[in-house]
Length: 391
Image 1 (tube, helix red, strand yellow):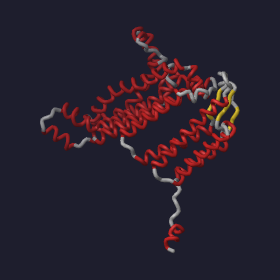
Image 2 (spheres, helix red, strand yellow; image 1 turned 180 degrees about the vertical axis):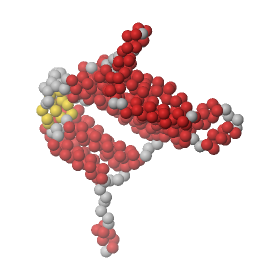
Image 3 (cartoon, rainbow, N blue to C red; image 1 turned 90 degrees about the vertical axis):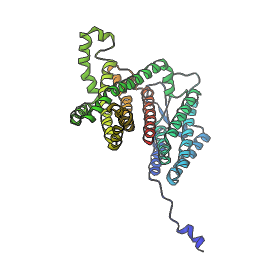
Image 4 (tube, rainbow, N blue to C red; image 1 turned 120 degrees about the vertical axis):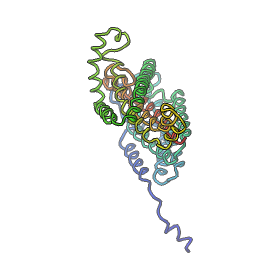
């Protein structure tokens, strides 16, 4: 009798709060928002279609089953591997379904009609992504595993896009029209973000070391950099346009080097100024964390101040410094988008051009790669900082 009564008296399975929230958001999105939008051209609002109207009944039913299964796992299953598998399977089904909808709803040979993923697709995509991220956080994979997983994910995305399955979707059609310019703006975006980071590292690292060596300088230096950090990006771009324009007008040699009031010059200077605070602050904080016993032991062994700094202090402070570099790089990748307003170029060109033309697909063509670039950079630098910390 006790054995039979045990299941009746067992504690009920705990509902996962995050799973409940994501399930509710996904269910509301699929109920009230369109799965795809069919537009006569790139700028008209379009006709909203739900899952049932956009896909054949068998495919729509299979997709709903996948999503319900992922929701059930998110609600009731705590095992991170099961949650990750369910999220990834549902993500794959969602992607294949929206690609199929694009193919079925686009008339043959028609290059004007646009089939865009609707609000339900984007909300469910974010919910499944959050479920997968939560599972990965619970698994706590090692840095190398995270890097390999990122590489595998990017490889799958590139292979899927190259397969032609998604060519009828509006974002891919915008890319096909702007392919050459996209490659050029992507290169400029990367150069602006990484170039300003390199310049800030060359200045910020010595400045952080100086703030550590001469503590009375630290409040003034960090206070000044804090003031710069509080200036809105677009305002700083505007402030720099006048002096850089005057320099270019007064010194033709600078103009020949590309210095002007608009374009890449004010963007690089602004990004450089914004990058200084995290690098200087993290360098000073990392050096302050170094054990005094390790420094005294190194000096007792006859090492010079330079040898102690290079071989002991900077090595032990490197994880904290890398964390500051990660903050700067992710920040710069996002801010380069705004620099397109002053002619700086980059992927922000598509964002603001799309806003001006009310073409949301062109906006996404610039926004999605920017997010992917920032996310990838954060994962790689986080893995590097954690590896250095363990060593």
